Length: 263
Image (cartoon, rainbow, N blue to C red; front, side, top):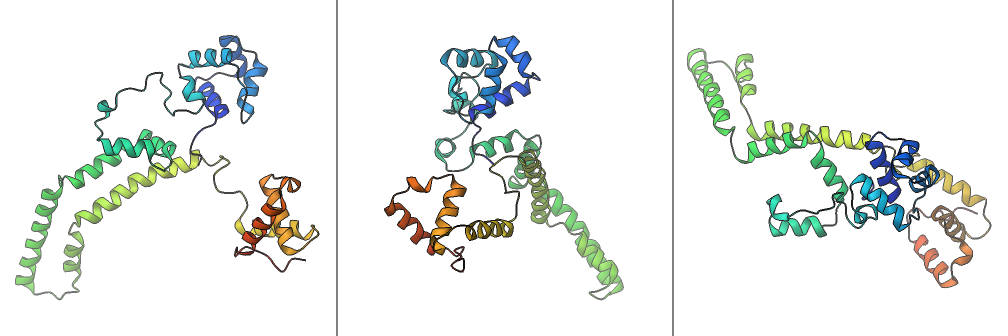
């Protein structure tokens, strides 16, 4: 998934969250429908300062949020002390090299509170006494059966009692995995259409396409790979210097995906 939303994506999200179409938003803000549509379609829309201010005021967000300087929509950033986070945690959240948007969506998920509650119950040992008490009763019943009936180790009833014993760690491990699984499964569904998710074609199909493209190009195998790479990256080969081209070709030859059999 994407680490951050683009300006156009943020504008579209803010509008759809309020249940507005472009015509309604144009009436509300006084900005033309064509301009609003352009802002949401272009990857890097050029919004004048006047219209940017109107949209910020209308949506109640900061210009820093729309321009990608912060992920906080609110005009006021708040006080970190209210979050009860220590300095190390704040530093990690500010400078950590991970997907902050994904972390935010996990925290906002309806099941996140239950996820943390189950972790807290296990970490604090709240259920340990109950588990130990239950296991003690099971063990007592097992000892009485052994003394009275002397069953074998593979006896059905003895196996039932053994299976009834609670492994607190395994129980909470499955519970917590279930909580987290529900969250990430829904997040994956929500982001299925994003450009930075898994490609629509398989890896095998991708290589087949690359081979077919390379076959149509004249030159050495390495030069073919270089031109295919330029095409896929949107780079004009004529803009690449000979030094850069040589470096790229040498790099390609070191790759396991290099196809020297192409002619």
